[in-house]
Length: 419
Image (cartoon, rainbow, N blue to C red; front, side, top):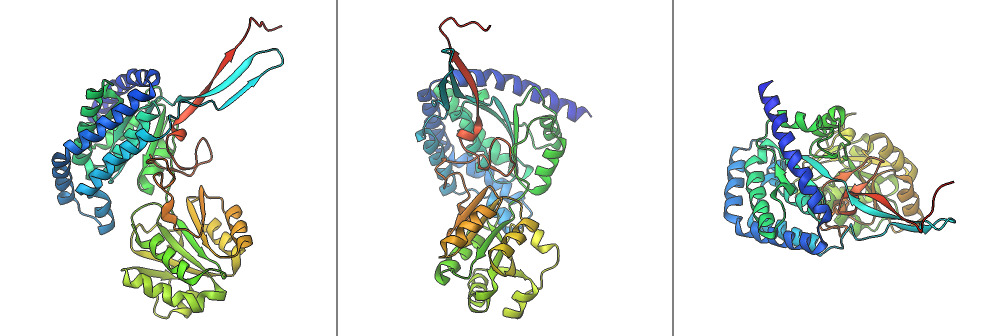
């Protein structure tokens, strides 16, 4: 109980400072925010040695799968990518310098809807250290303060990255409290954040299914999240074989531990006998294992037979579920039963089939003839992303600058009074 009280007290102080900092940000110019981002990028590069040393300690202490170790590990190239990410966000248009709508009423009142920052955002994430830098950049550019709570696996890395970012902030003249991290990885701090109504305006969880489900279940603050990334790639009977093989290899094996990785391959019965053996051979050479339905096992003997639960599993590893289907409608039905409304892809040369698929899936992102791993804020041109949203309120898909704003109204009159 004492730890929880201590966590609550720390969060109250941090959120109070963040609220004051968010007001400074909301009034700041785009030039000031861009200059801060550029200075923060330079500070990351300047702290390269300290960040890599902290990350090495995290990786040494880590005991988990190779895919999760990859997510945790930083290299000079990945730190440089974080720094470039901040500079890319600085180069993006100001999300606050827009007019969303503008109209004049019959009585002469002019009404404008304009963007506004959300305020103070709480970010809870797990092992990937670069998430803190990405979230900080997006929040700062969109005028929001952020309080970050990383996972225990990346605690040292998160502190080192945040120290560099705050150094850049102070050098640029903006409050260090714009970006803060939890003092430790104790679960009590998460509980304090979830109970932080009035302190935080929005919580964004980014991590495994259990974390997100806990946040959605316990939060007293609005949540923007996705539960898991159970993504599908569907190879239609009119698919180009070379394209299909290249796409599924990338969608599954480029990085198996990210939420946009394909977890299930659906393939039309009409081409399964011809294409599936080659696809399986391609993926086996890349180190992939399989869980296949009865029909796929008949096409490629020796595949591990899938259980009822396998098609509901987000592997986040070198494992692919495979099901043979009869056409677009059956593929859509499978996705409806087992998907998480994250990202789905169809590979086909048939435009009508693609249209039926793209309009038929109810996921945040749908692709035609492209890898599901393109579900990423950077690939969308957002500079970075703070997460993927699969809910139906406020934002869906990669959450970038525009999705971190709300709006308000400005009304201009000429002396009107209401009768």
